[in-house]
Length: 101
Image (cartoon, rainbow, N blue to C red; front, side, top):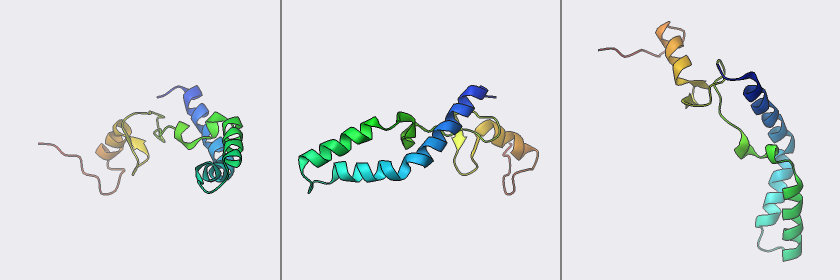
């Protein structure tokens, strides 16, 4: 089980990303538009840098829904390899067959 503070920190980041996503996309489009004058692009870059860092999507970490584990994460199941194996061996994941030989 991951630390509660790490899990909560990631949840807060996810809220900030959702809150600032549209404004961040608009500013990024202005910065990358080569047809605009350099002053407008520069000002858009300054506004983008003033936004909170945790509002960036890249700062989110994929974590297991059950345990909060950050590594060995399967996107399809939204859980870590260890939690998936535990649920799979008890037959709680439909269509998942544990291999043994």
